[in-house]
Each structure stands twice: as structure tokens, then as C-alpha cells.
Amino acid sequence: MELSRRTFLKISGATTAGAILGSLGFNLLKPKAAYAQPLKIKYAKETTTICPYCGVGCGQIVSVKDGKVINVEGDPDHPINQGSLCSKGSALYQIANNDRRLSKVQYRAAYATEWKEVSWDWTLSKIAEKIKTTRDKNWVKKDKNGNVVNRTEAIATFGGAALDNEECYLYSKMARALGLVYIEHCARI
Amino acid sequence: MSLKTIGQIKKGIKSLKETEQFVNSSLANIEKIFRFELDIKRKAKKKIDTSPAYSGNIKKKIEQGEQIADFSKIEINRNFLIKAFHKICEIRKSFNSEKEEEIKKIEEAIDNGKIDFTKIQENLALHKLSYFNTLSKKINVSKELLHFISLTVYGPIFEFCVEIRKDLIKDYVWKKGSCPFCGTNTAMAKFEKEVGRRVLWCPLCGAEWVYKRMECPFCGNDDHELLRFFCLDDKSPYRVDVCDVCKGYIKTVDERKRDKEEKTIFEIEDMRTLYLNDIAGKEGYKKL
Image (cartoon, rainbow over all chains, first blue to last red; front, side, top):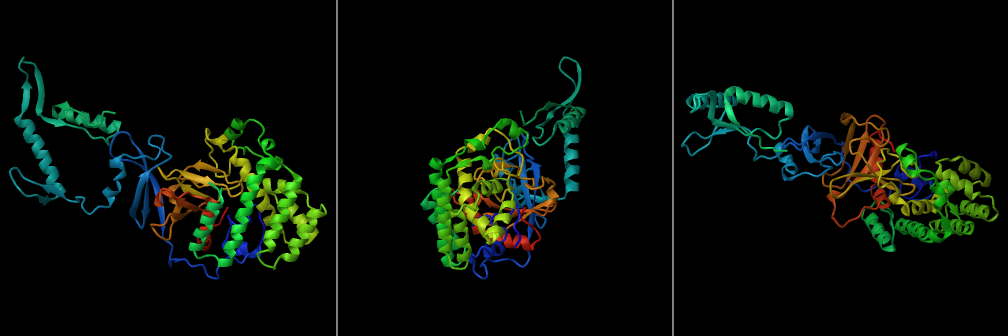
């Protein structure tokens, strides 16, 4: 066995168990170490990401094996959260892995008692229809003083914490174009 | 954290026994080594002067990425060294008779002054092997045995040197995978209990320092696609992080997967997981 500058011939720090220890005359190890080695080693990867929830933007590390998320944790090197996560961020694993999570749109019609599964195409058309109908029914061309206002007060928007500044700008533009005035944002930070 | 008490040593040996990797009789020998090293550390306080190892502007050195200690400059009482070398030779002889002749030659070389302790210290501190190569030929012993005997004496001295000044680096950010004290490459890591912060360990002086999670400590690669890890059991606290750029690997202990009270003692963890060294080697990765 060649001694190299990186070889540390202490009891601990052995490079490979048998080679180093055997060369020192230490027959420490059992002839066959008793560990359950799988036939094929499966590797996982980690990737950094940002929590999708609020505007704080905590850093996270997602571990993936065989194309599946196996863990989500706070990124200790992220300057914002330094590894900590709130209860929502901590539960993010369940966005990827929880059989109780809805994967299809559920719709309960007015006065109905049951949910029914609907498609996204139908859903988006329905949302557009409701916005149009509500806006048309509640359109205010002039206020009580006779000023032209062209607005609807029957629709409000609460924004979205995961929206970045550019998305918020476009979103508010769209809301104002529709005539909304009750434009709020749930993330006040 | 390193072994600091007899209780910790006993607990460590017990945990090594549980791994079933070691021949039973050898565990007693390992315990003798650990006890010897602890004894050296305890006596070091009165027998060595570590201050010459820390000279110059520490802050400037850290900012420039230079190691802050020079262990070759530690002043050690010569009689203390002689006694320590003899003691470890006795311990080693007690393991088996295989290396007895060579150990006797080392002991004779100590007694007749053929061993230059200053050069041994310098070689170990500066990661050189030239003196071991020369001396082993001169006294006709294997360089591996000579290196081992020397490292078992000086290792705890270097550890003591770091333990009393470990706060030197706490206010600074050290961005290298090599030890901020002695420049040795890290050998193992842990993810700390609270938020999984990665802490690297130096196998020579026992220093611990924080390092980025998503970066290879050997080559600095931070491409997520080329950094992977494996573990034999998803519930195991041990995993092996590999880098597909430099083909290096590092074993990691995830403290979050253990009982809260359990402390990570790297010397023990490294030995508990020797089987992972084998597997990593078979997978084509090497210790850098």
C-alpha cells in the first residue's frame, strides 16, 4: 500500500478498511463485514428551490430519487431563512406526495350538496363566464355624482403570495382592465 | 466533537461492537489507542506550548483562505514525547507479536536519538512524508508503522492545539473544504440537528467548520446535476455524498435522524461506517 499525503493512518480516518488496517498489522475486521449491501446502489440528488407560498421566499432543498421527491427541507445556506421553515413550508413535501391532495377540479354547483369532478377546460370556461356575467350585471358606468367611473364593485381580488413583483404588476393591470377596484394582496410583506 | 472522557470511549467501543464489523479482540486494542490519545490530550496542557502555532493576523489569514495554525511550531517537552512514543510502542506490541521486531527497532531509535522529533512533527503538520521515507529506511521498519506510531502521539497534541483556540474561527466564514487550522482535507461531515447545517471535520486535528450543503468540499463543484448521494437505508442517519467532477466522496451523519441526546463523535462515526468506504470505492469514488 502506498503512503500518500492524504493517507491518515490513524485508527479512524481509514481510507479503505481492509487495505490500511491490514498493512499496519491490525487484523481488526471480520473477514466479511456484515452489512446489507443492495445489489445496485440507488442515488438521490438534491436541488435548491424557493418555497412557493409567501413573499418571504425561503430557500429549500428538495431531494429526488428515481424521479420522485423523497424529502423537502429548509436550505441552511439560504440567507433569508438559514434552514428554518414555517409550518406551511415544512409541509411542502405533501404537495408532491399525499394521496389526499386533489388532483382533479371539484365543482359544487349553487345549492348543490355534492362535489363533482370536472375538466380544466370546462373549469376555465366557467370562471371566464362567471367573471363576465358578474361584471356585466354589476357594471357601474357613473357614480352617484355623475362621474364616469366604469368599474365593477362585485369582484375583488386577493392577489397571490407566490407572485413575484412582475407578476403582481401584470395581475393588477389585468384586474384594472376588467374594471376591478377592490384590489388587495394577501402578502403584506 | 472528539472523545473527551473514558465514558465516551466505552460508549464508542460499544457502538463499534454493535456494527459487527470488528473482530471482538480488536475492540479492546482500539480502546487502548483511544485511552492513550485521551491521556496525551490531558497531559498536553502542562507539557506543550501552543502559542507559537498561532502567529500573524488571524483575520487576514482567514480572509485570504490561508490556514491559521502551523502545528510544526508547537513546542513540546522532549521527555514527554519520548515517554509517549515508548508508551504507544508498548501498546502496539500488546496487540500481537506480528510487528514486535519493528517496534523494538523504533524504540531503540528513540533511545539512541536516531529519531528527530522536530522533523516528524514538521512532516505531519505540513502533510509531508519525506522524513518517514528516509527514517524508515534508516532504521529498517515499515514507513506505515512509523507513520502510525507518530500520528497516534501527535494527533491528540494537534487536537488539543485546536480545542483551546476553536473559537478563533467562529466569527468568520471559511469557504474551503480543507481545515481552516491545518489545511487537511475533510474526511467526514454532519448535518446538524436543528436546520441541517453542514459541518465538516478534520481527521488530523479534529477541527469542525461550517460548509455549504450544495458544494463539493474537495473541488468546489456546485452543479446540482453532478452532486449525488446514496444511503443503504432511508432511515439510516448515514449517507455518502459524491461528486461526479472530482470523483471524491464524503460520508455524512444526519443528526436529525438520530435521538436528540446522541452526540456525534467523528472518530467513532468514521469507524462505524467503514463499510461505506468500501461501497464508495466500489462505486468508483475515492477519498481525497
